[in-house]
Image 1 (cartoon, helix red, strand yellow):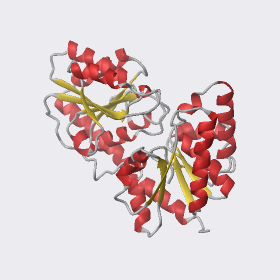
Image 2 (cartoon, one colour):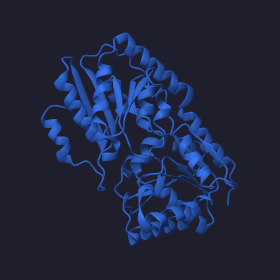
Image 3 (cartoon, one colour):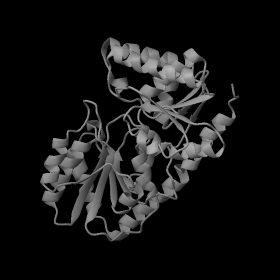
Length: 366
């Protein structure tokens, strides 16, 4: 399994790893060094690390990352590579093509690299097209990305499958029945980058607090990001010092944290797959607030289990947060029930795990 962080593998693919280990398979995990791989050390797997700048575009740096992945895969010589995230999908595919190793990438949004302009953007898109046409198979997390690949002619001869995001553990994330909590709590949990709508959330929280007499709290949780897209510590501290937000840092027990809030918020304008945080909120029976964008829109039935806000709009976010605060306990409970029902019907992680196991079973060993 190849991903852009060990944190991603631990949070989103640990159950899939467990399924392969239960089959008696040997599992290798490849991720950048110091990217959260320590969370995986309790598993009987083999960890390999390489250097990667998640949002970098320096040609020489990117070639070093590609060469490093190629070298590791050449030494391991695996039967099958499952890759995740836009940049590691591309480099995994290129390395596997050169080594004649079967590779199945998981397309979870197009990532920030798709927004690069100029000759670097052109080179990136041409390379992506060439690589994905040679994929053994492709997993998609939302219909918009799948349609985009079809329009670009990348799926003419490549088998593909639409998955329900990364899925969610319905036993781990369950409704807490805490519908009369005081104060009412909002939570945003994400990578701390600007495109996730973090600053909009903080600004909206400040406005809501200044305008309402209702007891309300705003919580923020997140994993630091080392790129130039990262939210600065000082930007968060400003709102913590003003007692606008409670900053939780990195959460190690998300089921417990989500059980203590009433509404999960993700005002993202990042190219998403299907955000896991929204799936966790839905499974836990919470009201959802997010943007009407690919991946996100599949988690919300407007007015039934949540509400959409306009991307980059603090005004829109304030308006919807006030609407949620005005809901009665019965209405909050009803919307939470709709969220849970949607998660059960569409986003059970067992569907995702089954797809990966089936893909491995269909692959002949070398």
